[in-house]
Length: 274
Image 1 (cartoon, rainbow, N blue to C red):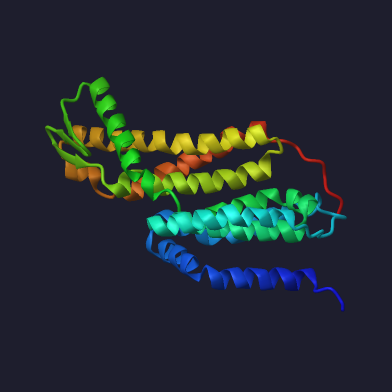
Image 2: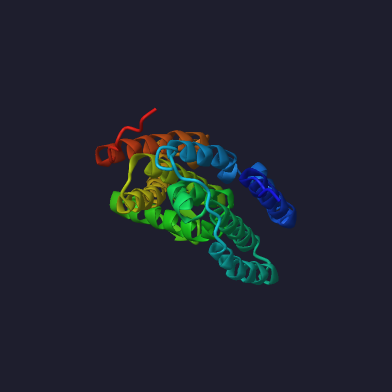
């Protein structure tokens, strides 16, 4: 009997996992559609495909060599899925399902080919809409930045949880102002950028860490700027008008600065023959 072609086996495996974990996939799609923090998730598969294409030179001459050992990772992933299901944590279920899919891919590709495509395989983690649990912590960091900045500027104020009162009015650090959407998008961008620009793992991790820390700090400065603008304008409402629009422009500038800051450290890869 002729062996089943690799592409057919891969397609059947992914279809089977899709049917098995359709609840997790449907939940992720609903979040992508309903939350502005995860709209970039629609770009994850195309970006992963581009990263795989970018590594075609590394994989040249390699052929799929299926190995059963990665399938052993399915057991802890299944246990993690069961625990997440019992706890009602959809993100945990989605990560476990993704782990099972990754184990299938590695088992079918073989170690050498999977290593060549490690970056696009790892990038698939951004398919999971994770990070919502960080919102309270991000709100606290933003409030701390505003509080510290107003102390330095000498503006009289009072802080109550996520509310800041100044003589000109009251500001509320809502969940939408916590900076989660910018943090998650920045991490997704940073991972793609690091995979394209750097070959050394420590450079990739350093740039990814910067893409996590800089947006958080920048969001605190943005919020402080809005409060200071309200103080100078004499109206909290006037300063807060269209602050989300200004925020997108501000973080676009931050992303450009991160991109420019990372360029001098890029690794020049050898030209790949056509």
